[in-house]
Length: 219
Image 1 (spheres, rainbow, N blue to C red):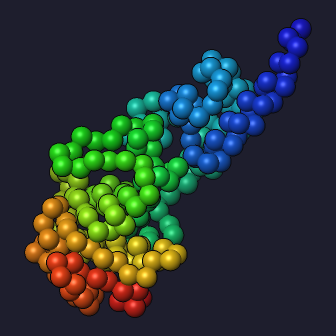
Image 2 (cartoon, helix red, strand yellow; image 1 turned 30 degrees about the vertical axis):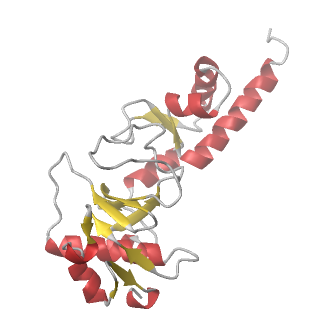
């Protein structure tokens, strides 16, 4: 016989789990502990029940998350498909650091990179290129940092130009952004960095030590 209130608890847990899945795409133990007031054992029982009903599946879908992940089958399929959206044509995805789709600082530890302080806050963004996290941006694009890659990937000249142009285009597509002001890249004044070449090719204007890109330059 079920204890009093047990069906209500299971229904409440299932509703919260579905809500987290809708917002985050996939669940891990650390995410559940951070977002839900119930014990992992209670939530795990609900995850197993939903899995038995075919409502979700488990596996290691995201490489950088070394923990069992739970997701709906259509979410797993979307993870396997190439990126789409307005920035995909540039091979660039600009992801706000505070976006729920960013696992760093929540389910995945931030990388240890000298000279960079990572945070899930407004104005900070991750730039992904070809599925790789290449660039960390602060101040809405004012300060750019290139991340070291353990796989040794270094974009060639043409690819780097595509990254820079895609970064500018992604920022200038955001609602309310009237211009992109870039001041430094890897601590170097932007005008002295190789990124200045593709930016000036777009028509970027010099404003003291900064380069300014306007929406009409990336259409």
